[in-house]
Structure formats: C-alpha cells, structure tokens
Length: 308
Image (tube, rainbow, N blue to C red; front, side):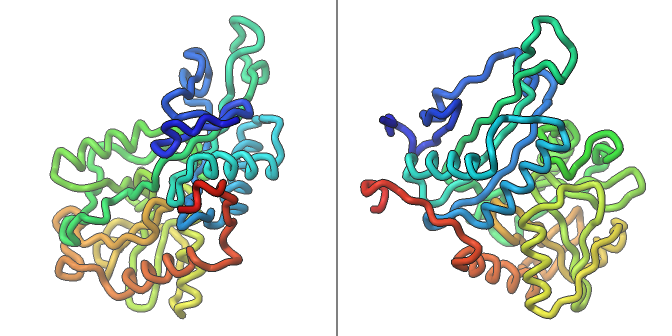
C-alpha cells in the first residue's frame, strides 16, 4: 500500500516502491553522483495526461543504449512506473523525470564502468516553467554567454540528455549577474547552440531557423518543427551564426517546461518592442492546443481520490 503522505509535493519511484520525494536516497558513491555518469529525460504531464510519452521514453532508451547502460526494464515497464508514480501523487500537472545511473561498483575499487550496477529511478514534482508565467513580457530575456562556450559534442554528446551542466551553470551566473533571466551558449565557432533546458529558434519572415548541432534534439523542438509545418512556415535546421540570430524578426525558446516562450530581449537587442511576436504567439497557442490532442496524450489512471 502506497503511503500518499506528502506525495503531492513530489514523489519518487525507486526499486519498485513509490515514496515521498524527500525520502528518496542514492548511495554517496553512486557513479551518477561522483562522475555524473547518468542520463535522464523529462516528460510533462498536463491536465492528467502525459504529452508524447512514447517519444520521451524512446529517446531515454536511446540515451541508455548510447551510454551502454542496462537497467533491466523494458519501455513498457518504464512507462508503467512513471504512470503509477504520478497517479499515486495525484498531480495533474507535473514535471516527470526518468533517470538511469551507472550505479555503484559491484567490485570494490573497480574503475571499469562495465562493473557497475546500472539502475533506474524516477521522480515527479508539480509542473515547472523554465520561465515563470507571471514574468512580464519585457523581462523575458536571455544573455549570450561571453566567458563560456557549450561543451563540444566531440567530448559529450548533447543528444544524450545529461547532467553535465558546468557550462550552463557558469553561463547562468553570467546572465543573472547582468540582470537577465536565462542564458544561451555559443559553440567555439560563434554559432548558437542551446540554453539550460531549452532549444533556441529565430524567425525571419516565414522562415523558422534552429541549430543542427551542439544541442539536445528536444521533443519540444520536434513539436515546434511539426507545428511550423502545419502553420505553413519554412523550417531550416542548420548552423546559426550569432549575427543572424540577433538580426531575426523574432526569437523564442522551446522546452517541456512551458512549451514555446518568446524572448523579447537578448543582450541589448529588443525584439518586438518588448512583446511576443506573431509567430511565437501562434506557436505558443498551438503548443497548448496540441497538449490536448488525444493521440498525443497518455491518460493517467488516478485513484478515485485523485480525480477531484
């Protein structure tokens, strides 16, 4: 019997058990902690259903395969664990993380990653917006990092969602110290890559441009590209120089934590006189409409007490 005490503040699934998030624990020598040898994914829940759950789980499984991890669970079992956990929490709008860690060495003292006990866990909290909805439009700003670049993809594959946030954290300090809400990182050639938890887009006329490298191929990014096709926009996935990004008609970001979010200021450049542009606005509204599409949702079977 699941103890539902405090699950609405956050729940975790570990070893087949559902518990309050505050009770979840990892060994201090887990390689997920000491080496950041870990992969994860995040799927949103809105109005009692997962959005694009199969796409998120499929990407998570590809990430595990890329890192040569085997947690002993099938995609069906992973989906069931997430659904059971969210159902127990009663959360109808949630940020839901699935995680695979290299784990603890099975042979004391080994430095061989093949000799660790890979494991899966998950957790959920009330839905997180990467940019607060109450933030005035004129404050939806991003800083282009000046003192740090994105980790090269030849070092860490950004298509494998990971916790290597050293570059993002340094960039966020830059942004916050300069009075900006978030940060966008460039690669060493000065091309736009991504920011912490989001992909970046530029709009020029009826063209929608986003990077083809140095970033996670976000499911929200994929949704934006699919919506753009439906809205008769031309999409270009290619390197994007900073000068081109700054010369755009509109710029916006995409994330599972908020969908499509217009930026009105990047460094000293003001876009749209401080308000969201028409393309970002249309995509924002379309995203939330798509969240309701039955074929893109996986409904959660809440217990009777969670239906209020």
